[in-house]
Image 1 (cartoon, rainbow, N blue to C red):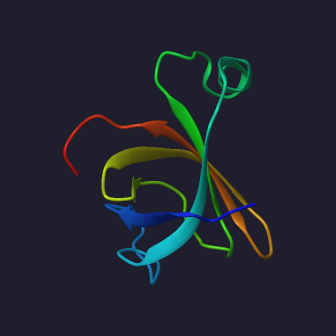
Image 2 (image 1 turned 90 degrees about the horizontal axis):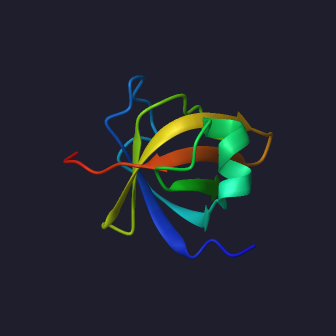
Length: 93
């Protein structure tokens, strides 16, 4: 798995040491077959953001490569990595 994108956490409800820092991330767009069971529909583009370290993220927004804004929907934390389900956010952060 390649961590070729940069992800910055912004406007999180519980800011911690991770907010504002840049992390290497793997970004994958979900297919409608994957998105419907999790989100209930496939109208908004959905993404999975994988980060190679465990972060205490619960909600907020992620800015990817300075051009794509994602709203955090669900977080799965492991001992050494974090997987975040996100929806594309169209608005100003």
